[in-house]
Image (cartoon, rainbow, N blue to C red):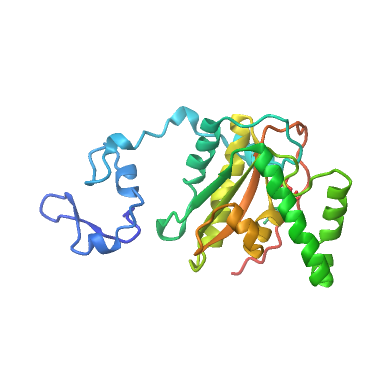
Length: 257
Ligand SMILES: Cc1cc2nc3c(=O)[nH]c(=O)nc-3n(C[C@H](O)[C@H](O)[C@H](O)COP(=O)(O)O)c2cc1C
């Protein structure tokens, strides 16, 4: 029942789950079969039950905890002058890769700017790109609010990566149809997990649009030529602590009956 592509059937004689003939062609490698098995008896060549840690009942969040956890995530725009340890960056990405993805494709590639000096240099490159757009397409630049960001930079305030020590870029095959959706979901997982290990994050919308528009920036990040940046988040230790949950719009919903 749990198999999304129905490539496991029950052997009618002894009720043993068996792969269908087309198993190899259609298995998504999502691991639901091993994860749902109540006794840990089910395994595949590439997935043994020992590799799938049990879900600890005592760690399941209550309704109240889940609500507060989701509502209290904030975009962080003020960072301490302290780089994040490599293990923590690696853990963020590990958790991000648990996000859902179309057909369990997990299409993500990651580029992490680990050196804060380089993050600042790349922010400067985004500003230079903005200046060129302001010259060549002033209307487009105005619509996208570039002049305020550039003026802030000139006055000594960095609004591209907000002084974060790191920027994490998620990228992949530029022609893959679900690249944007899968990447946004992975970054959401990253952002939700970050506070649990003391970190803060914020989408860098200007940053990844510039990466896709400016070949110099694309090259500076050493992205493969057939890739596209689908998103980016700044990451670091937050300077401010939030005390309250802000308001959000009520759902605009139409229930059909
Ligand atoms: C696609 C996208 C791009 C964004 N780009 C930026 C950005 O370039 N700079 C920034 O400070 N915040 C950026 N944000 C953060 C939003 O402004 C933020 O999510 C929104 O104001 C709600 O605040 P919250 O995340 O704290 O709930 C972006 C968010 C998304 C989803």
